[in-house]
Image (cartoon, rainbow, N blue to C red):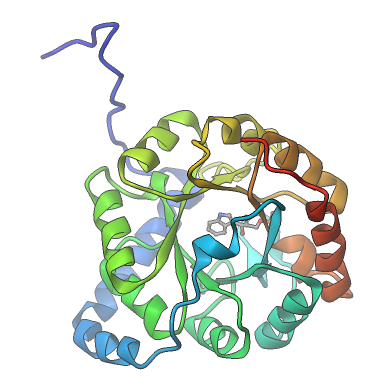
Length: 281
Ligand SMILES: O=P(O)(O)OC[C@@H](O)[C@@H](O)c1c[nH]c2ccccc12
């Protein structure tokens, strides 16, 4: 076996995701298998779907952008906003200045659905992202058929050959992949696979532990020709200073806006902080 020389970048051995992420990834894979034979039908629906709204473009510019998420529940907190009306919520986010809307479609732990995604995509003008544990091309077609303009791909959930395959498939369909990482090794994988919008999750999805210092530490390493998004754990406007100062292009906020009594005002307050920003990377 070949050892690593000091000049050879270390290639980590691929291991399956553990903990909650492992479970969610396996469940998502089973759901994909159950609809795999619908691929041709989904392609036909996708042809008539709402045209793609450029996601990359919506997140670029001199100011920090806010991606607001429709989130009823999470594995860490359980149910947080049980009766949430996805469309009403998304419309409030847009009035508050959200640059894009994230819609959870994972059903068991996040209380989401493709119906939510479809309804939101039909109601708002901004790009909508499918947030789930996607592991199969058929799920990208589902996203596009529902009117999504972007889809989340979690590096930790995807075996090395699968990540570039799904990134390429997403782009062929017209979806922009938001490629999620949590450390520098995963950043290298994302870059090598051609990711252009990179999200750094403050939450470790295997242990569910949150550390809001993660995104600010990783983002300065993201090349300036890529879009950098800080994700998770940001509750109030002040929490946006650290990712902004690290050079983030956008922040993704879920729980804080989903549980807000006035979601429009909450997003507006976040976007107001965002507007003071100047990109540093
Ligand atoms: O509710 P928060 O802490 O604002 O987090 C939102 C978002 O980052 C989080 O929902 C998320 C980030 N990556 C994910 C992957 C799958 C499901 C959910 C997520």
